[in-house]
Amino acid sequence: MKSLGKNIIWVVLSLTVTAFLFTALLSFDTKAPTELSIDVLANKIIAGEVKDITVSGNEINVTLKSSEKAVSRKENELGISETFKNYGVSADALQKVNFKIQDESGSKYWMSILIPVLIPALLMIGIFWWIFRQAKNGAGQAFSFGKINARLFSPAKDKTTFKDVAGLKEAKEELLEIVEFLKNSKKFTQIGAKIPRGVLLMGSPGTGKTMLARAVAGEAGVPFFHISASEFVEMFVGVGASRVRDLFEIAKKMAPAIIFIDEIDAVGRERGTGMGGGHDEREQTLNQILVEMDGFERDTSVIVIAATNRPDVLDSALLRPGRFDRRVVLDMPDVKDREEILKIHAKGKPLDEKIDFKMIATRTPGFAGADLSNLVNEAAILAARSNRKTVMQEDFLNSIEKVLLGPARRSRVITPKQKEITAYHEAGHALVAAAMKDSDPVHKVSIVSRGMAGGYTLKLPLEESSLRTKAQFVADMAVSFGGFAAEQAVFKDVTTGSSSDIQNATDVAERLVTRYGMSEKLGPRAFGNSGGMVFLGRDIGTEKNYSESVGSIIDSEINEHIQKAHATARAIVTKHRKALDAIAEALIEKETLEQDEFYSLINKFGFKIATIEG
Image 1 (spheres, rainbow, N blue to C red):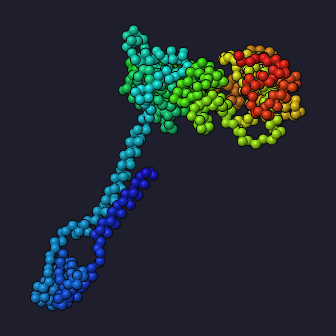
Image 2: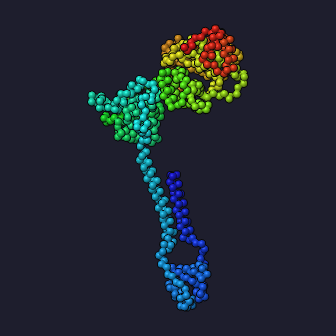
């Protein structure tokens, strides 16, 4: 409606300006002629002052011998000769004047008549034309409301292959079958094998689900339709289902093809639970997807690839055989995969010859592919900010800390006392980590403020593992209390800087008791069931499946783990007070200690090092 109003205003203004221009052109003259009455004109003719007379209808245009222009009008019924004869002009006087009779059907005459009529008519026609045009467009939009707006990636223009995706070896092997189906489906159908209908990619955010789906399309050389599941759902019931039908219809015309639905849990949640916005529109959209994937048409070469990081909430009908026949899990990359991913993202960037991607990969456990891509980009930005033409190893190492903790805040003004407290706090973390047998080795200790942290102690495992022992959790809790214990031992007081450490230790203790079955009193049992009610809040949505007496034991066990961890940290800090002072003094002086510097420093005090990276 806003567009229609603007169009009408423009039409009115355009036609008004045109009318004014025509009027100005028709009435334009260097000097307006003098108006004479017919008797005055007759007297001038008698006096011999008139040179030319041009008669156009009842209008008389006069040119005097003085070159002055004049205009007059005659009577309607009488001719020009009779008019002047009635006013006493003789025939001899009229002969001295040059008379011209002009046809009054000239263009000026007709334009003077038509323009006042045509301008309003054109104005009304223009207004109605715009109104009908907008109405037509609105009707067209109403009919196209159920059309899908899927993004089509052509393999010829934007080709991605498995070589562009580092790691994920098992996932690639699983998807090679899909590529073979798309390239040569007859090879399988001739022996009675059915073409898979769908592939579900499951993995944490950033593990490369979208890129892997695009690589399948690139390897097979088929069209690739990319759409988010949330784009199906509108506030009008039935639009989502209509868009699903439209998407599959387009894909079938271009078959063989791939339809990639990102974040399918937006419409594929379990039906009938009342969670996740379980309204009719979402369920109808899901029903239509189910029908399209496993309907009566079985001979189409359209494969649906969907991605989700919440496979636990998907509807069982979506996961049954005949819908998503393949389920591919994308794990977080290990150290070798991270090294390959770093090399891929570093292509095309000017790198220093001393870049060690293996060392960078070692320092980035838990980083997904998207995190590593961001890491390489941050390193290039740091190099550009330093006005260097190449990216150096130091840029990558600084970028790791920036991605984990935030940018360094060296301009932050702190008092000498705050600096001393921070130094002892971080020294306590590092000292306890070096003393604990099952703790990860210390790679760096710093009191440079980053993000919300006043300082940090960077610990990295010797080798990556998906399993953790109870002893490792106990060591982590003791390390968390290292800073708290150091403040108590040195300053006989504590600060708010340990709040996040205490919260982290409490969370670990709670998981030990309630989730991992590592409590000696309660045994191998899990307590509390979330039931998937994350939208209500994790604590509110947790189902209490134990009695009040058991709840008291759980609280007691959690508290016991925390107190033991605190006592362990205090004992280590008290026993190695000289080493603690030396670490803190070095941090106050240098602000940062790397791994070699740290271990060389504590070796001077005969400190028994539990684990050192070889």
